[in-house]
Image 1 (cartoon, one colour):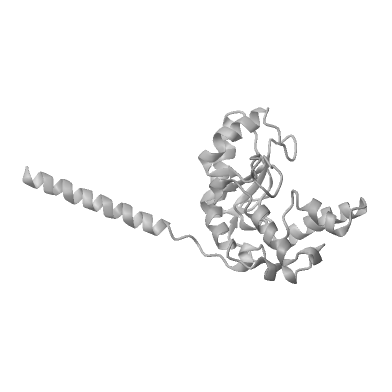
Image 2 (tube, rainbow, N blue to C red):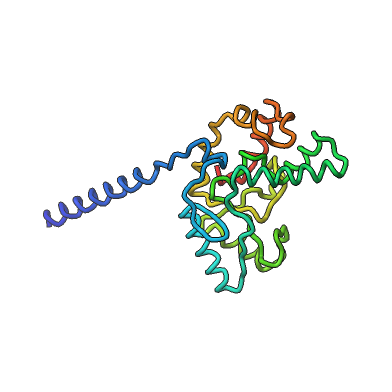
Length: 233
């Protein structure tokens, strides 16, 4: 009997040590360069037609496949975007508002309601996606089978909506289509939050950047960069 208890204790200690080793080996997040965090240097991506980091890629592939088996179609509209790609989107929208008669300053304010300043987009990380039901590019409705399925299942695959309809959230307007793979994006946000955005954006050729004053960037960071689903911190 004594030997039995000794064996049990040894197995318990061995099991505890194994768990500790696994935990400590998994709590060290990958370190990213400044250029990777702002979309100027590629990370290793996977996918055809869209690009994500490996773990996020395989997870969303599984989600799409299993949703299809349940009669729900999920289409990836956008995933990784480089700095230059985001800059083209920003400039196109900025120019459109200028043509409508908005002042440059007002155009900047209008564009950033939904669109990130180049160098500040979560799409630079290869962890975030814009999704649709396949019938429309982007959808904010909650009264469809697709939206119901996403609300009930996306988290099971590690994806969480970034810009929720929480009325106390600042920054970008509600986007039901934007999801983030939390396991990777959480640590990337922590690293990104250490960057000096004023210094980074100061000399970039971005439409309307003369209005990117230190006070503007400070508020933009607080509202837009950090105005997200609390669970993604």
